[in-house]
Image (tube, rainbow, N blue to C red; front, side, top):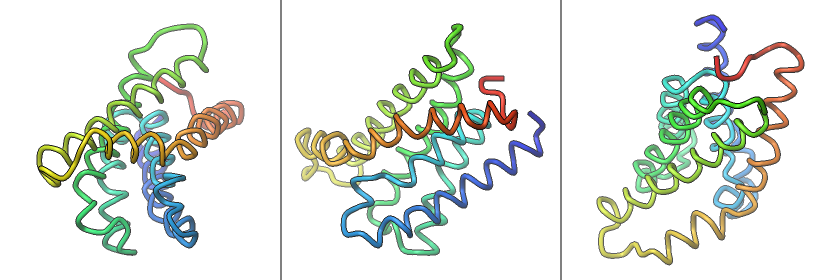
Length: 175
């Protein structure tokens, strides 16, 4: 994939990272449940590579916060750490994991990125931004229980999008 194509796709993912949450947040608490900003960042890492994924993971929440006020400033730093990890790790894993099954590679990269990102989010809250008021129970509840529908959506939708883009010969994953 050319550098120009990567920049365009990354830009589209950043734009989706701003627009999708605005649409989803019209439903009360849907942002915390459906995690709309996560999908374009994970896609960007998988399609464009780790550095573009990292940039998307940083720029999407920052621009979204500046444009729409979502996420609020108090939640922005841990969310930036989480999304930056998603973009970076998904991009690294899809390139490093070898195997014949493209689907298995995509799922492994997705799950690894989701775990590392959630750990980054929890550490940022526990050690820097919510010291003394953030607990393991809060973390588990927020990033796994409340977010379960969003995690399921990501695990279903992202591989379908990747497969469709590959069949249309728009992208080649892991190259």
